[in-house]
Length: 248
Image: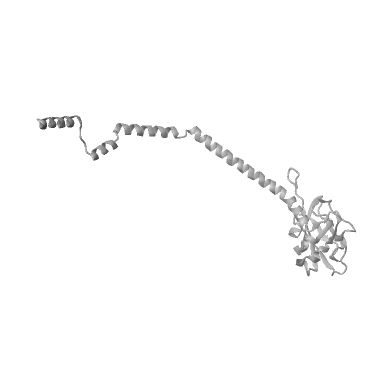
């Protein structure tokens, strides 16, 4: 009788509880219904459509990029023009201050008591020669009035160049200059000069242009200038050209 009751209890338990192995249970839990997967894919596609930029958004984005690039380009052009216009006077100022590039130093003071203008009489005289050239576009004759002068450091000297306008028109010319050897340029000081200034010559006019200069006595302390006995001062005249706004 007890056996019969146990059998009925076991049969009742299995009828209420369906048994399944562990592998099948895991497989059933991992299985995703087809309808649920379809809904997930549809939702993902809708999200991608919502994230995709519109035509107006793309146009606004590229317009902003083009505007930024345009501003950068304009800034570069303006900077280049500014440097181009400012480089000439800046270069001239640096060269006249330091003697760089073979440019003589332009003296701003002239006093007989200055130590720079005290001649070193015991120093060998330095031979100063003069040279000149004229641009092919300038119909002038431009030559030094003397071939050379000899000075000691600290001694002032006056030289002249003669310019003649051979054309039938009034012409404005501008001169540049240099000193060789280049290491002497920082010590070649000009008190008066016609360089970098407009020189207007009427048709057929002939003028003398003075150069008042001296060699700074500090040259004797520079080992790079030791043994230099000849210095050449060269001037080159160009025809002045102006743009429509009147700038040289």
